[in-house]
Amino acid sequence: MARPNSFQTIYLDSSALIAVIQNEKGCDPIKQVLALADRRILTVYASPLILVEVRGQRRGENDVGRDRKALEIFDGRVTRIDLNRKVALRARQYVGVHRLKPPDAIHLASAVEAAVDIMWTLDKDFQHLWQNTVDGVWVDEPYEFGQQAFPGL
Image (tube, rainbow, N blue to C red):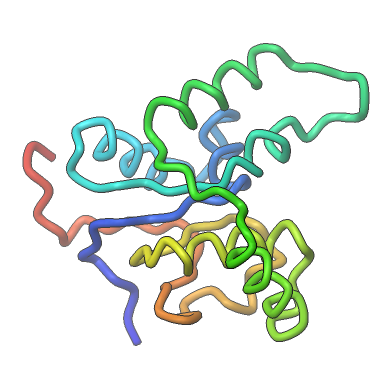
């Protein structure tokens, strides 16, 4: 199956948000998606778990700028998928079936429960799932998707 070029909903995990905050190589497609979300052309979903994971610092350390950017992106552009019993039970399954760490399984379960078209992650622990569909959600690393006609781009 080819990578989807047409989508209306996307889930971003913590690694995608960190890439944007740190302006890492390969983050341009994520920035494009966030710009489209700002214009209400597509909808971006994420778990509040990213607000914890994005800190990525040792206990007691605090990068105020990084935290501020994470909150700005999350609070301003993202539809939240809360961790509830249904998401947690699905995540428990994914830990075993897809060999994911619990936080990664929560992200995948959140994407599936939100019934998004695509989940983007730069987390190498998902690499075995890239370019595959998991319970209706295309899982992949961020990629250019210029074939879809987005107004104004």
